[in-house]
Image 1 (tube, rainbow, N blue to C red):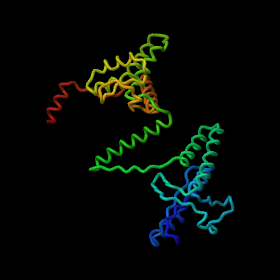
Image 2 (cartoon, rainbow, N blue to C red):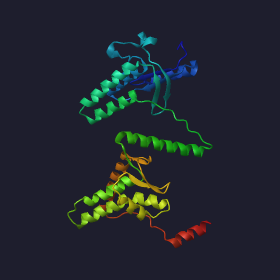
Image 3 (cartoon, rainbow, N blue to C red):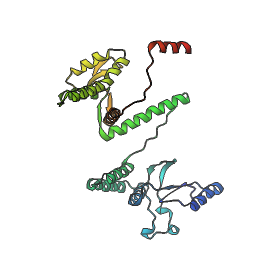
Amino acid sequence: MKRQRPLLIVSEDVESEALATLILNKLRAGIKVCAIKAPGFGENRKANLQDLAALTGGEVITDELGMNLENVDLGMLGTCKRVTVSKDDTVILDGAGDKTAIEERCEQIRSAIELSTSDYDKEKLQERLTKLSGGVAVLKIGGASEAEVCEKKDRVTDALNATKATVEEGILPGGGVALLYAARELEKLATANFDQKIGVQIIQNALKTPVHTIALNAGVEGAVIVGKLMEQDNTDLGYDAAKGEYVDMVKAGIIDPLKVIRTALVDAASVSSLLTTNEAVVVELPKDESEAAGDRLLLS
């Protein structure tokens, strides 16, 4: 406290009495202090604390090593340039830990991932590796109005989620062509009876819909675009609706995360399977043109 620097306490738990004392010191003495719970449980929590110590150049103070809070000095504390604490997350930027020590710990985690046979353990180890080796960027989003800022923020969030999905599973040509060419591959699928054949045709029609819809929204005939692409051997070829021309989608930068396409397809198949087993479905009846025109007239 003599150095007038903020103090971040990371522990397995924060008792109510200790928390009350910290709050009182902050309010009365103006001490900048924050206490948070260490992430994880059990051995994973201890490992996270060791990772944090390596990242910040500090030490884990624990009874297991015979340490006592009364004997702690400043040299045992870690440091960093900035800490942001929210209700659900804590972000630590530019820790002062030794780069060599951090890299050695990352190598230990990578080795543990290779040796692990548990999917759960691998997931937790990968999370630790990401926190240690990954970087953090601060995006400042501005606009002329609150609505514009919210719109830009939503776009950035979508882009970040798409990037994360891309890192996990890779990319596919965008504009719906990946699904379109998947529909062509289904023609090679052998069917045992007429019902299966109809089922395959239904899936094929569904897979063609994204390209068809994009073309219609661009003011061109969707069936023509779909037919043209289905004749091509290059599975990266697609229709750039913005330019109104056929391009190599990957080279043009029009791509989709594989995870997004796969998840959408699996979820759609799941919902479709559920609908086939239902005896009844509650829907909203579509309005005909005359009723729609009448509604517009009343509104005007």
